[in-house]
Length: 359
Ligand SMILES: [Zn+2]
Image (tube, rainbow, N blue to C red; front, side, top):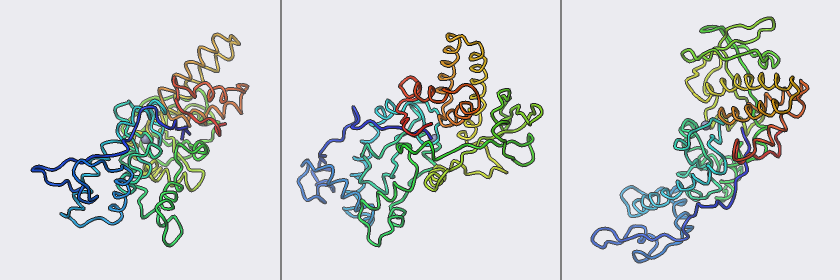
């Protein structure tokens, strides 16, 4: 996962300090105003509305009551606000999913509530609670973690709302944590085309520069992969693994590994594209290694720019770092990964990258 630094306060996103609710048809008092015991169109503090929504979500009002209707109207109003944060989030993080790393076209990126809005309405318009995600991660995550999860994880008998929120947040590896890169590592699997079991590829086979993408066939990515002696036409897969419990929770939250690697359904385009990205890294590196061999700085720069551009187009930042790190350690390209990290942490390539703990 690519760790990111969130720019706060956001340059454009704003939440009005107060809300006014107009009379219903015929001058009838708006249920929200009734609940707050104010006249129609009286400004009500937004924070008071959010607190009321939180209490309703924990103790849902009975159906067809004034409280139920007031809660509905508050949701309509407050849920209409957060969407306008999307522009600031895209400017900050670029057009990538903050969970899986998939490059996603602008209009398909959704504002994600890390603590879900129906469980934690108290933070439904709070910019600190927002990330940007792809449609797959968004639907897989749904309304988790729940308030009940937070209560259970807080470890105290009668937790305060703040304790529940903190516990719900602390159990997952979010992209805004500087440790996010170290939380995950890919493994590389191979099996005969259309049959058989997956086996792990050692790095020196997985990162053999003559490996190459062949095609996507049905649900399988087919590639030409080094087997220790020669290149073989096989099915391949890149799998994401957790380094710790909170990373494991994160992968489960977004259903990243919702399939059995021995009976995979690669229809999940996150895994499909991650797998193709592995092979794209090798392709970019093959060109770069040749350029390095020429010793000509102009050629080296040209190929390095190509490598950065391909990374930006293919996404899955951590896959690039993981493989470049291997080449940095095992070849004479000793500055490769650090140069890549430093020169892509900008608006041209990967906006908002927090480079603090990336190798
Ligand atoms: Zn995603």
